[in-house]
Image (cartoon, rainbow, N blue to C red; front, side, top):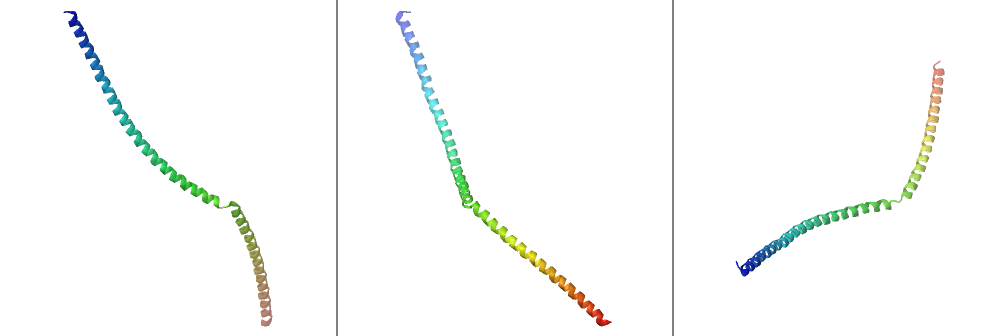
Length: 127
């Protein structure tokens, strides 16, 4: 074997190794691109899901804010004043009821004494 044959074989081997490396390296970016596309699709699906959840949460927050607004509009001081008014009117009703009860007792006693007197008079007429 001559020196030229050795050099040709060496360069052939070097070209074969470099070509193999280039083929391998060209496949790596293709796989990486495919993996990145899959990952991007997964992230986009997750993003859509999170956006839907954020929209639903915003609706619920708005509803709760409306309820809080209603509660804030009911002034607690007015409620206390109304309760004081109700208490005062209940006291007045209680006084009237007590007076009515006393009148009923008085009328009842008057009727009892009248009926007792009438009975006594009837007994005297019978004699």
